[in-house]
Image (cartoon, rainbow, N blue to C red):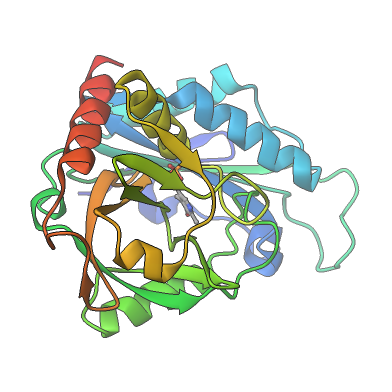
Length: 281
Ligand code: PMP
């Protein structure tokens, strides 16, 4: 089935949705993106995604093409036109198209592309089976807090994990886990959630934030500090968060089982709380 895609002011069938070869997103990865999950046909935590989008654009001095409310209207229109019940909306804003030059072009209009992707988020077999991750050196740049489309290092790490028979990679820098290829990484130690603090070294995950808030409201203690691979392997539980996975258990790291090697109670509880809230959105 052909989707309807939004490109710079137009709703088009996907085959007709095109951008310029001079688009700086294509030439320089000079673009940022957001993925907002959709549950029961509704956007989850959209305001937080819009706030992060504005921040990413601000860091790169790209103008926000529309205000948040207008962008959300386009997203809702796409959800409707594509009959999307569960999955995500992908949004990309680029600096625009201009003759190739490292310097920013003057008076170029930012480009906006939005499309939907259907995906089973709630009924995900990985929630029962758990994920196997391998660890890889984090070779990405130093501004991982800006959600740019510069995703090749993460894509290479993900493929290396799949080639090794695992599900994903956790990236490691100076002995400490930074994050997953497209998710934030956490562990459970002595009943507390241990998670790396926010900095330029990781993406400030919207799902991470929601999960930590839900954990706090549920009386689970949170310790924001970096953790090592060895500590993660010895933890009671390990988990990831992202808009595309919500909260999922990690049951092995580099072939070593975490805890019992099965999804643990804290992760199960947080996933259930997250899904409950997403459904009420
Ligand atoms: N870290 C990285 C590197 C990511 O790519 C993502 C998802 N795009 C996340 C964390 C999770 O962020 P969010 O919860 O906002 O989806």
